[in-house]
Image (tube, rainbow, N blue to C red; front, side, top):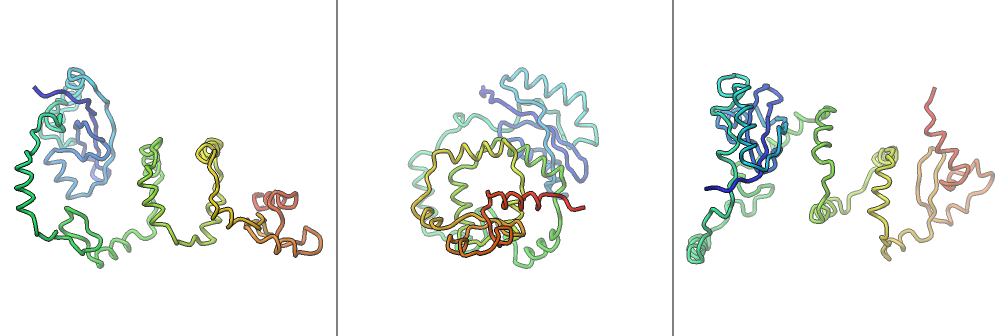
Length: 280
């Protein structure tokens, strides 16, 4: 008898057509597409623009089965045209099973498979932009058409909120950080982007989070060398820079006429307030 695995019961709704699908999975219900034939064919035809609602997470077989069968019957998911289900969902059949029920390959079988594939050239060797399982990589023409079709499109606030709710509390792994760091190494941030980032007002919770993750960190010798001999200033347009001390102290005349002043000085604070003050 199969061991029961804690299971999610979910409802998926196609955002374009409105068709619904009720199912179960022991994996991530947001990434899992479902297993219904009609549902998968519908996604293939209309695209995977789907919303997921979690009905519940169940750790006992009896409770999961009871809720699944009640929901299936109450919503008549097989007969109703609003649902893509072809059979009643009982919360037990299909889906993932305990891996201990599978027999692992013997060492002899592994060697036979290895010998059979030895010397074969992978189908995607030397092909840029392809991954294992991608038998039809997009051509440059297709990529350009997709780029043009999506150019200027903005995500709706609802989509942004869904993604924010999904990622809330998730921590980025060190491996992901390394990939992001490598991808952005050498890239130069435009002044426009810098100003946009400066304009973002951080909440107290964000400030506290940043303070905690940087607490106890020490600047490297390279960073110290880079910052040595510089001062943080604000110019007349309210932009903040780091400039050499020699350049800062070479200014003459009243401080109010200086191109750059200390960003925490009284003149600097006045410039910040002036930039934040709404124009009338």
